[in-house]
Length: 380
Image 1 (cartoon, rainbow, N blue to C red):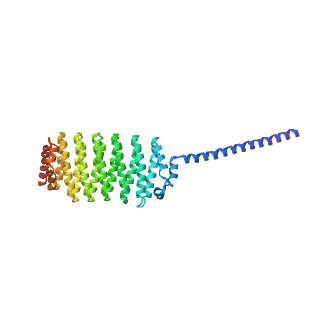
Image 2 (cartoon, rainbow, N blue to C red; image 1 turned 90 degrees about the vertical axis):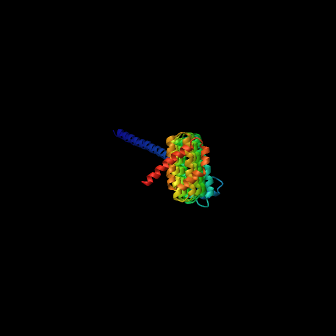
Image 3 (cartoon, rainbow, N blue to C red; image 1 turned 135 degrees about the horizontal axis):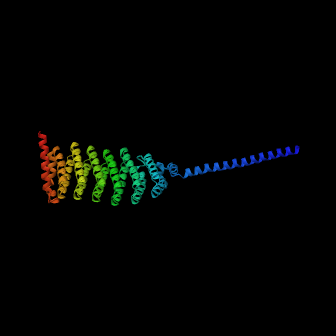
Protein backbone atom coordinates (compact mmCIF):
# COMPACT_ATOMS: atom_id res chain seq x y z
CA UNK A 1 0.00 0.00 0.00
CA UNK A 2 2.71 2.38 0.99
CA UNK A 3 4.57 1.47 -2.15
CA UNK A 4 1.59 2.37 -4.33
CA UNK A 5 1.18 5.79 -2.72
CA UNK A 6 4.85 6.56 -3.11
CA UNK A 7 4.74 5.56 -6.74
CA UNK A 8 1.71 7.73 -7.38
CA UNK A 9 3.38 10.69 -5.66
CA UNK A 10 6.54 10.36 -7.69
CA UNK A 11 4.57 9.99 -10.87
CA UNK A 12 2.64 13.14 -10.03
CA UNK A 13 5.84 15.06 -9.34
CA UNK A 14 7.37 13.87 -12.57
CA UNK A 15 4.21 14.92 -14.49
CA UNK A 16 4.30 18.35 -12.89
CA UNK A 17 7.92 18.82 -13.71
CA UNK A 18 7.39 17.70 -17.31
CA UNK A 19 4.49 20.09 -17.69
CA UNK A 20 6.55 22.91 -16.28
CA UNK A 21 9.39 22.09 -18.61
CA UNK A 22 7.02 21.99 -21.59
CA UNK A 23 5.41 25.24 -20.54
CA UNK A 24 8.81 26.89 -20.19
CA UNK A 25 9.69 25.78 -23.69
CA UNK A 26 6.43 27.23 -25.02
CA UNK A 27 6.97 30.51 -23.23
CA UNK A 28 10.50 30.70 -24.57
CA UNK A 29 9.27 29.98 -28.10
CA UNK A 30 6.54 32.62 -27.89
CA UNK A 31 9.08 35.12 -26.61
CA UNK A 32 11.41 34.43 -29.50
CA UNK A 33 8.56 34.67 -32.01
CA UNK A 34 7.33 37.92 -30.44
CA UNK A 35 10.76 39.52 -30.57
CA UNK A 36 11.11 38.40 -34.18
CA UNK A 37 7.71 39.89 -35.05
CA UNK A 38 8.68 43.20 -33.44
CA UNK A 39 11.94 43.16 -35.39
CA UNK A 40 10.15 42.34 -38.63
CA UNK A 41 7.60 45.08 -37.98
CA UNK A 42 10.40 47.61 -37.48
CA UNK A 43 12.06 46.44 -40.68
CA UNK A 44 8.79 46.77 -42.60
CA UNK A 45 8.35 50.29 -41.23
CA UNK A 46 11.85 51.16 -42.29
CA UNK A 47 11.09 49.89 -45.79
CA UNK A 48 7.94 52.01 -46.03
CA UNK A 49 8.54 54.68 -48.74
CA UNK A 50 7.19 57.48 -46.55
CA UNK A 51 9.50 56.46 -43.68
CA UNK A 52 12.49 56.36 -46.02
CA UNK A 53 11.59 59.77 -47.43
CA UNK A 54 11.32 61.19 -43.92
CA UNK A 55 14.77 59.90 -43.04
CA UNK A 56 16.25 61.26 -46.29
CA UNK A 57 14.63 64.64 -45.69
CA UNK A 58 17.00 65.32 -42.80
CA UNK A 59 19.87 65.34 -45.29
CA UNK A 60 18.38 68.24 -47.27
CA UNK A 61 19.86 71.48 -46.00
CA UNK A 62 20.69 74.77 -47.66
CA UNK A 63 24.41 74.10 -47.19
CA UNK A 64 24.24 70.71 -48.87
CA UNK A 65 22.12 72.04 -51.70
CA UNK A 66 24.67 74.72 -52.47
CA UNK A 67 28.06 73.36 -51.43
CA UNK A 68 27.88 69.56 -51.40
CA UNK A 69 29.24 67.59 -54.29
CA UNK A 70 26.35 65.18 -53.81
CA UNK A 71 22.73 65.99 -54.51
CA UNK A 72 20.67 65.45 -51.32
CA UNK A 73 17.43 65.61 -53.30
CA UNK A 74 18.33 62.78 -55.68
CA UNK A 75 17.51 59.82 -53.37
CA UNK A 76 13.99 61.12 -52.76
CA UNK A 77 13.48 61.86 -56.45
CA UNK A 78 14.59 58.31 -57.23
CA UNK A 79 11.76 57.09 -55.02
CA UNK A 80 9.34 59.49 -56.71
CA UNK A 81 10.53 58.30 -60.13
CA UNK A 82 9.94 54.68 -59.11
CA UNK A 83 6.49 55.47 -57.72
CA UNK A 84 5.50 57.15 -60.99
CA UNK A 85 6.61 54.07 -62.91
CA UNK A 86 4.41 51.91 -60.61
CA UNK A 87 1.49 54.39 -60.66
CA UNK A 88 1.85 54.77 -56.88
CA UNK A 89 0.18 58.16 -56.57
CA UNK A 90 0.34 58.28 -52.74
CA UNK A 91 4.15 58.01 -52.67
CA UNK A 92 4.48 60.38 -55.62
CA UNK A 93 2.34 62.96 -53.87
CA UNK A 94 4.18 62.65 -50.56
CA UNK A 95 7.67 62.72 -52.07
CA UNK A 96 6.94 65.82 -54.17
CA UNK A 97 5.33 67.57 -51.20
CA UNK A 98 8.38 66.94 -49.02
CA UNK A 99 10.80 68.12 -51.73
CA UNK A 100 8.80 71.31 -52.35
CA UNK A 101 8.63 72.09 -48.64
CA UNK A 102 12.38 71.57 -48.25
CA UNK A 103 13.09 73.82 -51.23
CA UNK A 104 10.88 76.54 -49.80
CA UNK A 105 12.38 76.15 -46.33
CA UNK A 106 15.94 76.51 -47.64
CA UNK A 107 15.19 79.42 -49.97
CA UNK A 108 16.84 82.77 -49.29
CA UNK A 109 18.84 85.34 -51.22
CA UNK A 110 22.04 83.36 -50.80
CA UNK A 111 20.62 80.00 -51.91
CA UNK A 112 18.24 81.11 -54.68
CA UNK A 113 20.58 80.41 -57.60
CA UNK A 114 21.64 76.96 -56.41
CA UNK A 115 18.14 75.92 -55.44
CA UNK A 116 16.80 77.06 -58.82
CA UNK A 117 19.20 74.67 -60.54
CA UNK A 118 18.11 71.71 -58.39
CA UNK A 119 14.45 72.62 -58.74
CA UNK A 120 14.69 72.82 -62.53
CA UNK A 121 16.63 69.57 -62.91
CA UNK A 122 14.35 67.46 -60.76
CA UNK A 123 10.85 68.83 -61.35
CA UNK A 124 11.31 69.23 -65.10
CA UNK A 125 12.58 65.66 -65.40
CA UNK A 126 9.77 63.99 -63.44
CA UNK A 127 7.25 66.27 -65.13
CA UNK A 128 8.33 65.08 -68.55
CA UNK A 129 8.16 61.48 -67.30
CA UNK A 130 4.52 61.83 -66.24
CA UNK A 131 3.63 63.43 -69.57
CA UNK A 132 5.41 60.73 -71.56
CA UNK A 133 3.53 58.07 -69.57
CA UNK A 134 0.33 60.09 -69.94
CA UNK A 135 -0.14 59.79 -66.19
CA UNK A 136 -2.36 62.82 -65.65
CA UNK A 137 -2.97 62.09 -61.96
CA UNK A 138 0.75 62.18 -61.14
CA UNK A 139 1.21 65.19 -63.42
CA UNK A 140 -1.37 67.15 -61.42
CA UNK A 141 0.71 66.59 -58.27
CA UNK A 142 3.86 67.85 -59.99
CA UNK A 143 2.06 70.88 -61.43
CA UNK A 144 0.57 71.73 -58.04
CA UNK A 145 4.03 71.79 -56.47
CA UNK A 146 5.62 73.79 -59.29
CA UNK A 147 2.73 76.26 -59.14
CA UNK A 148 2.99 76.57 -55.35
CA UNK A 149 6.75 77.01 -55.44
CA UNK A 150 6.53 79.62 -58.20
CA UNK A 151 3.75 81.58 -56.51
CA UNK A 152 5.46 81.61 -53.11
CA UNK A 153 8.78 82.57 -54.73
CA UNK A 154 7.13 85.53 -56.45
CA UNK A 155 5.44 86.64 -53.25
CA UNK A 156 8.73 86.41 -51.32
CA UNK A 157 10.76 88.27 -53.91
CA UNK A 158 12.73 85.46 -55.57
CA UNK A 159 12.73 86.39 -59.25
CA UNK A 160 14.97 83.60 -60.50
CA UNK A 161 12.92 80.79 -58.96
CA UNK A 162 9.72 82.40 -60.23
CA UNK A 163 11.17 82.48 -63.74
CA UNK A 164 12.31 78.84 -63.48
CA UNK A 165 8.83 77.75 -62.39
CA UNK A 166 7.30 79.42 -65.43
CA UNK A 167 9.89 77.84 -67.72
CA UNK A 168 9.10 74.36 -66.36
CA UNK A 169 5.37 74.89 -66.86
CA UNK A 170 5.96 76.21 -70.37
CA UNK A 171 8.09 73.20 -71.31
CA UNK A 172 5.49 70.76 -69.97
CA UNK A 173 2.72 72.57 -71.85
CA UNK A 174 4.40 71.97 -75.20
CA UNK A 175 4.70 68.23 -74.57
CA UNK A 176 1.20 67.86 -73.07
CA UNK A 177 -0.49 69.73 -75.91
CA UNK A 178 1.41 67.74 -78.50
CA UNK A 179 0.05 64.54 -76.95
CA UNK A 180 -3.43 66.12 -76.78
CA UNK A 181 -3.73 65.57 -73.02
CA UNK A 182 -6.48 68.07 -72.44
CA UNK A 183 -6.86 67.81 -68.66
CA UNK A 184 -3.11 68.11 -68.15
CA UNK A 185 -2.91 71.04 -70.58
CA UNK A 186 -5.78 72.75 -68.78
CA UNK A 187 -3.98 72.36 -65.45
CA UNK A 188 -0.77 73.78 -66.91
CA UNK A 189 -2.67 76.78 -68.30
CA UNK A 190 -4.22 77.36 -64.88
CA UNK A 191 -0.84 77.11 -63.10
CA UNK A 192 0.82 79.45 -65.60
CA UNK A 193 -1.93 81.96 -64.94
CA UNK A 194 -1.52 81.77 -61.16
CA UNK A 195 2.28 82.09 -61.19
CA UNK A 196 2.18 84.74 -63.93
CA UNK A 197 -0.37 86.78 -62.01
CA UNK A 198 1.74 86.54 -58.84
CA UNK A 199 4.74 87.73 -60.88
CA UNK A 200 2.76 90.70 -62.23
CA UNK A 201 1.52 91.61 -58.75
CA UNK A 202 5.12 91.71 -57.55
CA UNK A 203 6.41 93.75 -60.53
CA UNK A 204 8.29 90.88 -62.19
CA UNK A 205 7.48 91.96 -65.71
CA UNK A 206 9.85 89.57 -67.46
CA UNK A 207 8.34 86.53 -65.75
CA UNK A 208 4.78 87.75 -66.25
CA UNK A 209 5.47 88.31 -69.95
CA UNK A 210 7.05 84.88 -70.27
CA UNK A 211 3.95 83.32 -68.75
CA UNK A 212 1.78 85.14 -71.30
CA UNK A 213 3.98 83.88 -74.14
CA UNK A 214 3.63 80.28 -72.94
CA UNK A 215 -0.13 80.73 -72.56
CA UNK A 216 -0.39 82.12 -76.08
CA UNK A 217 1.31 78.98 -77.42
CA UNK A 218 -0.91 76.85 -75.21
CA UNK A 219 -4.08 78.61 -76.38
CA UNK A 220 -3.33 78.45 -80.09
CA UNK A 221 -2.14 74.83 -79.97
CA UNK A 222 -5.22 73.86 -77.95
CA UNK A 223 -7.53 75.57 -80.44
CA UNK A 224 -5.91 73.83 -83.38
CA UNK A 225 -6.21 70.45 -81.64
CA UNK A 226 -9.72 71.37 -80.48
CA UNK A 227 -8.88 71.05 -76.79
CA UNK A 228 -11.66 73.47 -75.95
CA UNK A 229 -11.42 73.47 -72.15
CA UNK A 230 -7.67 74.01 -72.27
CA UNK A 231 -7.93 76.87 -74.77
CA UNK A 232 -10.59 78.59 -72.67
CA UNK A 233 -8.40 78.30 -69.57
CA UNK A 234 -5.43 79.72 -71.48
CA UNK A 235 -7.56 82.71 -72.48
CA UNK A 236 -8.73 83.21 -68.90
CA UNK A 237 -5.20 83.00 -67.50
CA UNK A 238 -3.93 85.58 -69.98
CA UNK A 239 -6.74 87.92 -68.98
CA UNK A 240 -5.86 87.51 -65.29
CA UNK A 241 -2.20 88.33 -65.93
CA UNK A 242 -3.11 91.26 -68.19
CA UNK A 243 -5.45 92.80 -65.63
CA UNK A 244 -2.89 92.31 -62.84
CA UNK A 245 -0.20 93.85 -65.05
CA UNK A 246 -2.42 96.88 -65.73
CA UNK A 247 -3.06 97.25 -62.01
CA UNK A 248 0.67 97.35 -61.37
CA UNK A 249 1.38 99.70 -64.29
CA UNK A 250 3.28 97.07 -66.28
CA UNK A 251 2.49 98.47 -69.70
CA UNK A 252 4.48 96.00 -71.81
CA UNK A 253 2.86 92.96 -70.22
CA UNK A 254 -0.59 94.53 -70.48
CA UNK A 255 -0.10 95.08 -74.21
CA UNK A 256 1.35 91.62 -74.68
CA UNK A 257 -1.63 90.04 -72.91
CA UNK A 258 -4.01 91.84 -75.29
CA UNK A 259 -1.96 90.86 -78.33
CA UNK A 260 -1.69 87.19 -77.27
CA UNK A 261 -5.38 86.94 -76.45
CA UNK A 262 -6.13 88.40 -79.87
CA UNK A 263 -4.03 85.72 -81.57
CA UNK A 264 -5.94 82.98 -79.75
CA UNK A 265 -9.27 84.58 -80.65
CA UNK A 266 -8.32 84.75 -84.33
CA UNK A 267 -7.24 81.09 -84.26
CA UNK A 268 -10.53 80.15 -82.61
CA UNK A 269 -12.55 81.99 -85.26
CA UNK A 270 -10.59 80.39 -88.11
CA UNK A 271 -11.25 76.97 -86.60
CA UNK A 272 -14.95 77.66 -86.19
CA UNK A 273 -14.89 77.58 -82.37
CA UNK A 274 -17.61 80.08 -81.59
CA UNK A 275 -17.54 80.00 -77.79
CA UNK A 276 -13.76 80.37 -77.63
CA UNK A 277 -13.95 83.28 -80.10
CA UNK A 278 -16.57 85.13 -78.05
CA UNK A 279 -14.73 84.30 -74.82
CA UNK A 280 -11.49 85.84 -76.14
CA UNK A 281 -13.39 88.98 -77.20
CA UNK A 282 -14.99 89.35 -73.79
CA UNK A 283 -11.65 89.03 -72.01
CA UNK A 284 -10.01 91.47 -74.42
CA UNK A 285 -12.61 94.03 -73.41
CA UNK A 286 -11.69 93.30 -69.76
CA UNK A 287 -8.00 93.99 -70.42
CA UNK A 288 -8.75 97.12 -72.44
CA UNK A 289 -10.99 98.43 -69.68
CA UNK A 290 -8.40 97.69 -66.97
CA UNK A 291 -5.71 99.41 -69.02
CA UNK A 292 -7.92 102.47 -69.51
CA UNK A 293 -8.71 102.63 -65.78
CA UNK A 294 -4.99 102.56 -64.96
CA UNK A 295 -4.09 105.14 -67.61
CA UNK A 296 -2.28 102.69 -69.89
CA UNK A 297 -3.45 104.13 -73.19
CA UNK A 298 -1.40 101.80 -75.37
CA UNK A 299 -2.88 98.81 -73.59
CA UNK A 300 -6.40 99.95 -74.47
CA UNK A 301 -5.36 100.57 -78.07
CA UNK A 302 -3.79 97.12 -78.30
CA UNK A 303 -6.98 95.51 -76.95
CA UNK A 304 -9.08 97.43 -79.48
CA UNK A 305 -6.82 96.40 -82.35
CA UNK A 306 -6.94 92.78 -81.20
CA UNK A 307 -10.73 92.93 -81.16
CA UNK A 308 -10.58 94.25 -84.72
CA UNK A 309 -8.57 91.20 -85.75
CA UNK A 310 -10.87 88.76 -83.96
CA UNK A 311 -13.92 90.44 -85.49
CA UNK A 312 -12.41 90.34 -88.97
CA UNK A 313 -11.55 86.66 -88.57
CA UNK A 314 -15.05 85.86 -87.31
CA UNK A 315 -16.58 87.67 -90.28
CA UNK A 316 -14.26 85.85 -92.70
CA UNK A 317 -15.32 82.53 -91.15
CA UNK A 318 -18.97 83.54 -91.64
CA UNK A 319 -19.65 83.30 -87.91
CA UNK A 320 -22.42 85.89 -87.97
CA UNK A 321 -23.44 85.66 -84.31
CA UNK A 322 -19.85 85.77 -83.17
CA UNK A 323 -19.09 88.70 -85.48
CA UNK A 324 -21.83 90.69 -83.78
CA UNK A 325 -20.72 89.62 -80.31
CA UNK A 326 -17.12 90.68 -80.95
CA UNK A 327 -18.38 93.96 -82.41
CA UNK A 328 -20.44 94.53 -79.27
CA UNK A 329 -17.37 94.13 -77.05
CA UNK A 330 -15.40 96.54 -79.22
CA UNK A 331 -18.29 99.01 -78.99
CA UNK A 332 -18.27 98.74 -75.19
CA UNK A 333 -14.56 99.52 -75.17
CA UNK A 334 -15.13 102.42 -77.55
CA UNK A 335 -17.71 103.87 -75.18
CA UNK A 336 -14.96 104.36 -72.60
CA UNK A 337 -12.94 106.59 -74.92
CA UNK A 338 -13.85 106.86 -78.59
CA UNK A 339 -10.65 108.68 -79.49
CA UNK A 340 -8.35 105.90 -78.26
CA UNK A 341 -10.28 103.11 -79.97
CA UNK A 342 -10.94 104.98 -83.20
CA UNK A 343 -7.26 105.86 -83.44
CA UNK A 344 -6.28 102.21 -83.01
CA UNK A 345 -8.67 101.03 -85.73
CA UNK A 346 -8.01 103.95 -88.09
CA UNK A 347 -4.22 103.63 -87.88
CA UNK A 348 -4.41 99.94 -88.72
CA UNK A 349 -7.40 99.93 -91.06
CA UNK A 350 -5.40 99.25 -94.22
CA UNK A 351 -3.63 96.30 -92.62
CA UNK A 352 -6.91 94.90 -91.27
CA UNK A 353 -8.54 95.20 -94.69
CA UNK A 354 -5.60 93.41 -96.32
CA UNK A 355 -5.66 90.65 -93.70
CA UNK A 356 -9.42 90.09 -93.94
CA UNK A 357 -10.19 91.31 -97.48
CA UNK A 358 -13.58 89.68 -97.87
CA UNK A 359 -15.46 90.58 -94.73
CA UNK A 360 -13.69 93.23 -92.64
CA UNK A 361 -16.07 95.89 -93.94
CA UNK A 362 -18.94 93.67 -92.75
CA UNK A 363 -17.46 93.64 -89.27
CA UNK A 364 -17.06 97.41 -89.28
CA UNK A 365 -20.70 97.86 -90.25
CA UNK A 366 -21.87 95.60 -87.44
CA UNK A 367 -19.55 97.38 -85.01
CA UNK A 368 -21.02 100.76 -85.94
CA UNK A 369 -24.51 99.37 -85.37
CA UNK A 370 -23.55 98.17 -81.90
CA UNK A 371 -21.90 101.50 -81.12
CA UNK A 372 -25.06 103.37 -82.17
CA UNK A 373 -27.04 101.20 -79.76
CA UNK A 374 -24.80 102.24 -76.87
CA UNK A 375 -24.98 105.91 -77.85
CA UNK A 376 -28.77 105.76 -78.05
CA UNK A 377 -28.95 104.04 -74.68
CA UNK A 378 -26.81 106.76 -73.11
CA UNK A 379 -29.09 109.48 -74.44
CA UNK A 380 -32.16 108.02 -72.77
